[in-house]
Image (cartoon, rainbow, N blue to C red; front, top):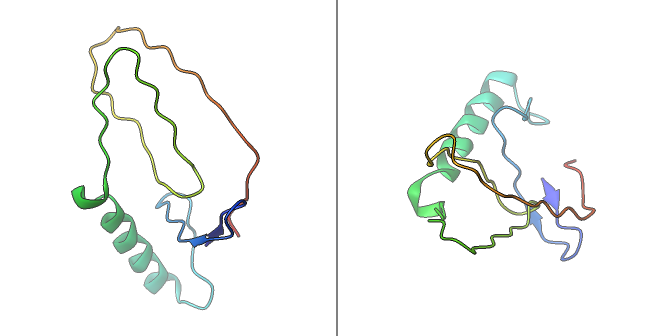
Length: 92
């Protein structure tokens, strides 16, 4: 679980490669639940897929979303990215 540092709202933090267990659950049971949740959150109904155009700016709140890069551009196409980072909570 994560608690949003500004709103105090709790959210479920599921990263298949980062989650190593769930307190109070047997390892096999926890692994199965983590896998099921990780599969659930990437279903198309829950995914925003941005189609880039010149001049677009996209920002998201890492505390409350899952994100990943998809190589959907021709190599060696140049891209310009800027990163903005603000302090926040660490998963419990």
